[in-house]
View 1 (cartoon, rainbow, N blue to C red):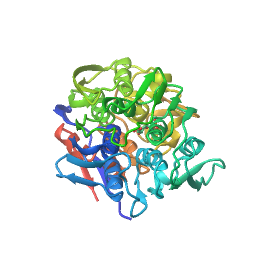
View 2: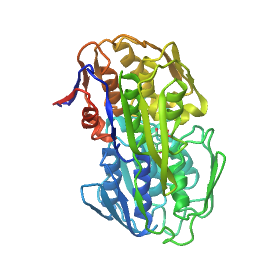
View 3: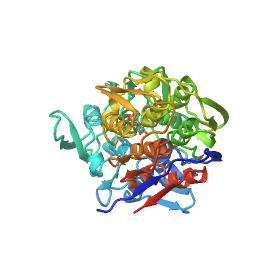
Length: 452
Ligand code: S3P
């Protein structure tokens, strides 16, 4: 199948400007789901049509919901209450989106109809035991396919339900084996259909968008430290319709902010960008490595803070990223490796074993990518170490994205600093999270082309 490639030329001047970023992918999924379960019309503004979010939107259309979309970012969901979904007409295709699959699996486990969740080649390799085990423990009927290499693991497609008539899911107390917002959110959504509370503890708090949005919508949820507890609402019309101005995605902004830090003579501002503290590890890491950065909080929407972030070209030094900082920047580790590539000394990324089961094995692919640009990197079981090359051009490279959007965008950013043209192969995947990535970089001054 022909794929699309990027041709990235070395930058001639700096990157400069103030730009919007796509709507936060995690918040957009949750807003679509809770709007579908609300009783009445909810408006999502600033929706940016990343393919992962469109997969969630289409899933609800498949379950009989009317979703009006003006194509300009205003999405109106005609929610039908907690019991208003219908059996999907066809298997639900989650595309590349692990969040769509895991969150919907929780929601669908509580329904009295059968459903099937499928996905693309990358999603079909990802572990689903982490949701199947606790959902089954509360009485869900749920099955997956055996994992090709891990004997006790399950992968998509997932076959779900139906819950027998008159039966509800059981209450659940569960300690998550890993910090995971997808697992936590899947169990909380299933908890809306349970006969008693859902109480979850995780090793380190993962992104808390589900908790914040449920609380903003007056659902009976409470968080204390890393423990969260939700009582099932007695009223199927408990969720009132709402309106949200979706904040921009800090995980997408990360590519631009890092580019500003490492490309000489640059200064970039991202506008209306999410600043949820469970996601701002990237800001802390850029600062820790010596990045020149300013943030200004501007407001909140459904409990989600947002504001403006500015980064300018910086003199960077290596450091150690571990523990809660790793959890709070887990999706940004690929682009933070690009930052580390231009820092003096060694940067170590620790406690990031989860990167091996993302859209690709991001530890293995990042080590290969860095070496292709002439940057030394060492692979570890649960992380990697990067030896920075703060001065002089990198070696121009030909990179295979492995179908992973964050690998493709990281390669494009590093290509700006190379000694010749860099080619990034297989970049259609960028549309899963940042459809306007190339246009945004060009607007900032990069010379970058898309070739089919
Ligand atoms: C997400 C949670 C994270 C993250 C993913 C989006 C979410 O995964 O990597 O891109 O929206 O809940 P975990 O479930 O591993 O935390």
